[in-house]
Amino acid sequence: SGFEVIENDKLDKAYVGEKYQIAVKEPNWIFWSCAPGDVFPADFQAEVDVEPFLSKTGQWGIVWGKDKNNYHAFVLRSDGSYRLRHQVNDVWQKDPVPWTESPSLKRDTEANHLMVIVIGDIITLIVNDTVLKTIQNVNFGPGKIGLITGAFDDPDVQVRFDNLMIRDLSDLDDVVSNMDL
Image (cartoon, rainbow, N blue to C red; front, side, top):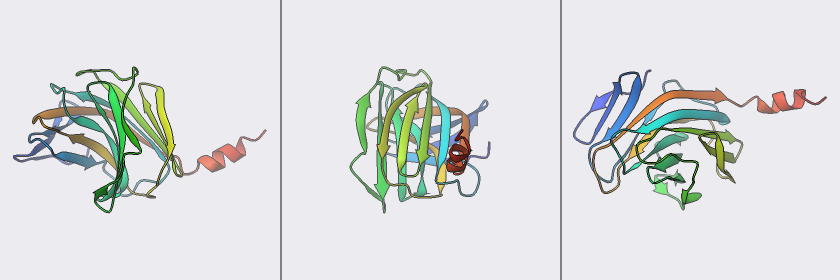
């Protein structure tokens, strides 16, 4: 709980039952909501169940970064593909991971369990307990983590999110060094 609730002609962010929903009403828009809290650590693990409710178009997933102009977005779409987007100073960069199909992704309106792990400049993308990709890219440092939904050509993309968990991994080096036996 604690996510922004708002409704206007372009979007609807609301709680539906016990799930958080972001509905994009207009084509070619992307909206995201930051998890409640101040600043999250630079090294983290975030995971969430995501269900495109009555939506077969658009994109949805986890977003993280320094601010609304500098962030990464790990997103899925209902055709079983995913990508990692990267924005710097409000300009989209070449996708570190372009749209890629994976048999590990559930299709259409089935729910998927997304996870992203960021340690230093290493980003690992996981769906339904399968590692899809591990890459090296910019780490913006401590910042915000949230949920994102976007519409392409079609309006009315509705996505429901549940079971968001964010873990601080900033002490991971201490844990690993203490494990030397």
